[in-house]
Length: 362
Ligand SMILES: C[S@@+](CC[C@H](N)C(=O)[O-])C[C@H]1O[C@@H](n2cnc3c(N)ncnc32)[C@H](O)[C@@H]1O
Ligand code: SF4
Image 1 (cartoon, rainbow, N blue to C red):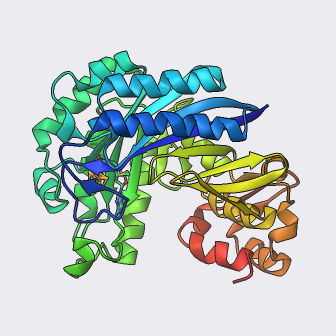
Image 2 (cartoon, rainbow, N blue to C red; image 1 turned 120 degrees about the vertical axis):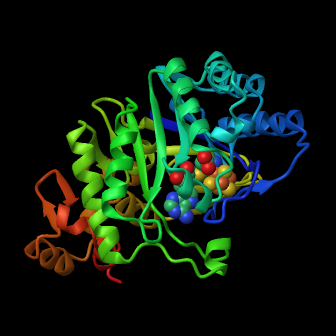
């Protein structure tokens, strides 16, 4: 029985952050009951396409899924477990924004069945919270973290760094403060300026490449000193607290995507399909899926397990990699390869996109 992740996307937010290119809209008075009822039927639909799955994770992402009323979260979880076999201790994550914390939010989400909470803190200083257009204050961020820690055993926060003019020493101190909170997991994202965002229109630039590299190195050092292990380019966890759902994407397991920002990759008989809203699916070739998995897998610190790769997409890694480019990248110290694995080295991490382009022959 194949492993499956369920991604449930909630496309609404209380406000639009100036850097954010995710599919999200600011809209009040959403008829949640109507939305959720269509989500429940979509789950049934995907089950009708393939019921031979074992669900290992559910992830509520967004947008701002902490705006979904907890009673509906519970319904979606119950529905999933009535449709497919589910692993014991199923990981059920939700991304929450501190601006939705009404004091009871995290207790209610726990009650609804969430067992992993990821909080979008983004910065631990007042000035940068304002710059990033966040509508929570530093005090609110700390208060929400405290409540997350009280209610969950498995928790994470997101921080965005490589902000314009960010000073290495300030980032080091900010990150140390974050590490001192006692969370099991941290996601540290370098600010990217995406086209059509408010930041792009205003000509705002993230930190220069050499500073961004320095900030990345500092992140690694600080995280290591607090016993967090980098298991993916932007993700750090204490032992056994990696995000199982996201690992599923990077390792190439199938997932169902629910909601109008949710895409999926599922097998129907022996073919692989790209699924997207509303209940559309198109076949993708095994080579297309293999290239996708190469891009995802190289983000992992442990790299790609060749057997698992073959099992998940039906194509051997050696069939899609440009051998000449691989040999040069190995000789130059960007890639490490043995019989079972292929991975990007520390040095290679700074030029990951270049490496990927070379390997797929671009
Ligand atoms: C899908 S967003 C949802 C999080 C939630 N809505 C919130 O804002 O708290 C997931 C994460 O992506 C990161 N992110 C979004 N846009 C980004 C950008 N342009 N650069 C770097 N990180 C970004 C943020 O850290 C954010 O928490
Ligand atoms: S960062 Fe989060 S809250 Fe801000 S617009 Fe994007 S999804 Fe919404």
